[in-house]
Length: 236
Picture 1 (cartoon, rainbow, N blue to C red):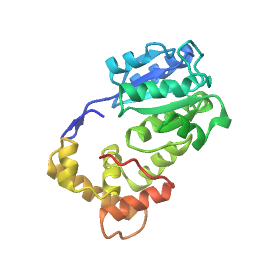
Picture 2: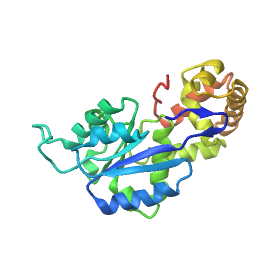
Picture 3: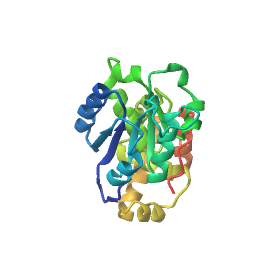
Picture 4: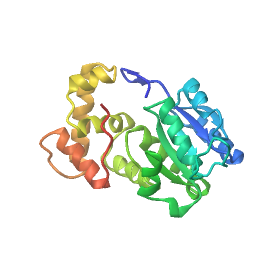
């Protein structure tokens, strides 16, 4: 992610890799309207993806799992997996959100095969609550979660119940792993007093939202993730 300074953060940059141009245009329309996000482009095939990603430097890539095969695909006919590999080679820190029409692909197998951080079913994009589902998924991926379709909405609901704001969610993975205020502030390019204030806010919010008198903020963060049944990536 891009460096943060105080309470101001650069927008999270999003690239869409999808041969469904109508879906890509719809995603562009929504992402352009999401506060804190910036649409940086659309690419429909594997050819040229690595170079484009290196040039555009997205933070998150929405990747169609079923891109058409071409001469660059591997013998296993798994173009989506090869695209994920290309993206990792160009940008090791990029976070990948798989988009697929195949409900059978939902689960740990596709996540393991592609190394993606999240998976979103196409039906979520076309459903009645589709805009919010996409926003929830992007927020979850940006905040360090590993997601399968629908889990991002759970995160948003629990955060709302606890009174957590996006700035608190961004801090939670650091707190889960017990990183000190000084280290967090240095890594996030944030004033130490601001980080310390956020830590206290998180602890107070989680004590109330989870109805438990946690002894410290790390205990509270662990309980938050335990409630969701997930483990965040180590942000360090």
